[in-house]
Each structure stands twice: as C-alpha cells, then as structure tokens.
Length: 69
Image (cartoon, rainbow, N blue to C red; front, top):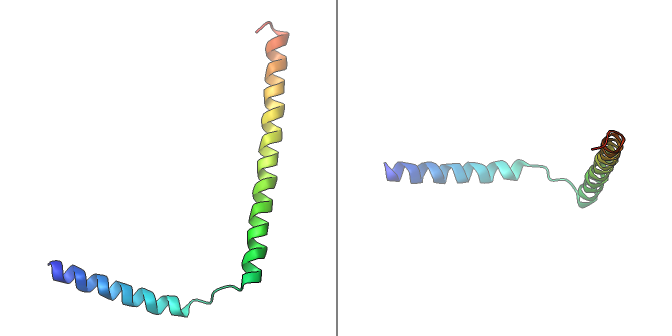
C-alpha cells in the first residue's frame, strides 16, 4: 500500500510538471500593471470603509452626547 502511494505521488508530480509547461505565464509588464490595479482598488475600498467608519462613529458619538450617554 505504501508503494502505491509513492507511485501515485510520483505520477502526480510528473503530471503537474507537464501541466506547468503548458501554462502561458504573463509578462512582467502585465504583472506590474495588474499589481498596481489591485493595490489601488484595495486602497480605494479601504478609504471608503475608513470614511464610513468615521461618519458612523461621529454620528454615534453625537447621538450619545445628545441623549446624555
């Protein structure tokens, strides 16, 4: 049984290697552009969340101070 697992593992690695040879990897310029887009979108979403959190916290503090909290 242990030898079967070793054979299966070896087959799996050989198949993986042959599949990775078929992959068309992106060029460096494309990777850099896509990375910039992801970082920019993440920053924009983070800024939106920060603004919403600030407004919600300010509104809550205003309500609490208005009602003696």
